[in-house]
Image (cartoon, rainbow, N blue to C red; front, side, top):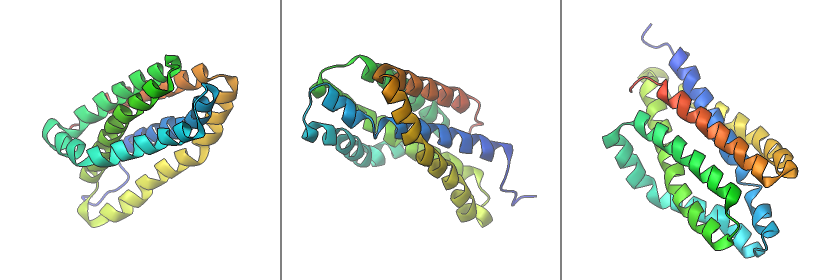
Length: 184
């Protein structure tokens, strides 16, 4: 069955992507409120996602090329571990300028994660069903984006530290899942 789409590796990668987006999209909508709580301006709170997005976009050609050379599995593992570190740093940093500087670096690793996961998933899919497979895979990210803000704000109401610890734990789960992936 060379055109088999739904393989164990496919479902593992869907689980990985769900976890990636669950972790990120609980942080993205809550971080601006945290910046306001720290005394930052509304402009600074808006810069958080802006800096992450621009950093991710401008570094994508570099992180994609790096994933081609170093291997997608390796980039997935190291990016996941870096996001554990960012999540823990977000928990303790109270300086808004430092927080905004950190999110720029976060964007580079986010870009690596997105590039490597897309390349890895594409390599798993049979060519004759690639677009279909990417469509199904996309559902895992959309499902995470649908529930993550609710989860994020629930934890944010318990305290910023709890939200960051949850993100760190999810990122650690991502790293563990990535170590279990076959080399693509």
